[in-house]
Amino acid sequence: MNKLSLLFGVLLLCACSKNLNISTIQNDENSFENSYITVTGIVSGDFQEKGELGGFFMQEDALLSSSGIFVHSKRKVNLGDEITITAKVIEYKNETRLDSLQSIEVLSENNAFKTQKLKFPFSIKELESLEGCIVSIENELQISDSYSFEKYGQILVSNIPLIQATEIYDAQDEASKILKHNQEQIQNSIVLDDLSNNRFPIDADLYLDKEDLVLGGILNGVKGFVCQKNDKYFIRLINDLEVSVPEQNLNYELNGQLKIMSFNLHNLFNGDGEGENFPTPRGAKTFQDYQKQLTKLASAISFANPDIIALMEIENDGEDSLSTIFQFCEYLNLNSKRTHYKVALSNGVAAKDVIKTGVIYDASILKTTKLGTYHSNSIFSRNPLFQEFVYQDSLEFVVSVNHFKSKSPRGAEGVNEDQNDGQGAYNTKRRLQSEALLSIIDSLYLTNNLIVLGDFNAYSEEDPIQKLQSQNLLKLPTQKHSYVYKGRKGDLDHAFVSSSFIESLQESKVLDINASYPNWVDYRFENSDSSYFRSSDHNPLLIGIY
Image (cartoon, rainbow, N blue to C red; front, side):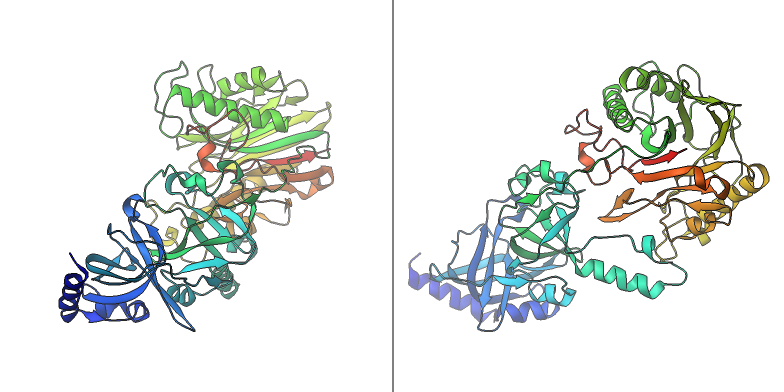
């Protein structure tokens, strides 16, 4: 088709369409949805070979402003082309874009276009005004979450540390502070994405080495296109990133003659105990995955080298030779620094759930005075375990291992539904579990040297943890977080000591070997290795006594 014919076709189409500025479309997209319009702009990004993304960005540059839009099309264009097109305005997963392109005319070539500057903190309104535009971020940023990198080529970055609001603010008395805090967290963070919409994109690591994906890693020079999907804004990167990986200060040493390790095992199940009956209800899908899980968990425990291991999320299948806890103990004796680990045998009902709490200890150093006791109460799905120990024939203390109801909303009804106060679902149940635990302690262990620890599924300023900080129980401080959820750090794992035992407490710390590392290097994925990194989704807590 010669240029005259092309121009005639364009004029015919324009007679049936509206000739608009890109900024007009972006500012009032609802008025033009499903309408054919004609716009002029400069091609600022050409990604027609990028799978589902296939298309290009065009940008309208004015003296004081700039607006951009994505055009879903396979029609060939070149970066810097000034073009006039006629296409239909659509909303694709809440992103305004042009589709069903009917005509295109190249007006000139090799044109320059603006790169807008985006600076944290920014508002949703500011992001809306820049949708479709190429931007650069001048702030120094940190990696806050890498959960979706392997699957979608995305990472969450922020200008400030992202922290769970109820880790630092009381849900009952500081609602306004929680609201302000959450707004600040949103305004100081954004998702970086690759240039495809494919799951498990093969080229996501072109802009970032997987080995650099440790939370807290520092990066600079972010540049890409502001896009929207399902009410969330993100930046499609057009440049590689260089990350300064934080120094790994993984000091497992702490003051005290005895070391206690509180460790959520992330659902350790052994099938039938003879290498069969996989997949298991919660844990490994194959015997090979189970072996990888054992290797990583043993590596973590060997690294920390504790005298007592308080366990959560281990299969509730008894304590005989085919049970998960017995076989895990035997594996540790063959694959850790210790050779005298022993299961603390118990009485009572461990749980109504498929998982339970448990204790393994070094029998060459410690003695048990009697069987551990699981205290039943209908409010618990996993009953708390109390185990008495003797050290150096005279020093007696009790360890209580707990695992409270999770925040998952599944099955929640009435007062256990999420009350939108920051504490998640089942907060009432967790508070009642705290009260039941305190009742057991007050009636049976009030005069004992007592350590109460575990995964309480509640952050530090939430009701269950506040309830447990009674006159007789003192919460132990830690310097780092035990868990990361959607990029926000907090402590779900806690430890308390009785006031009579506080002088024997020497030190407590979180060992950050899991929560800051990518979930897709755990035992379930091909990226798994034999290291202790991401041996669980929770960081272990270490406590030194005597």
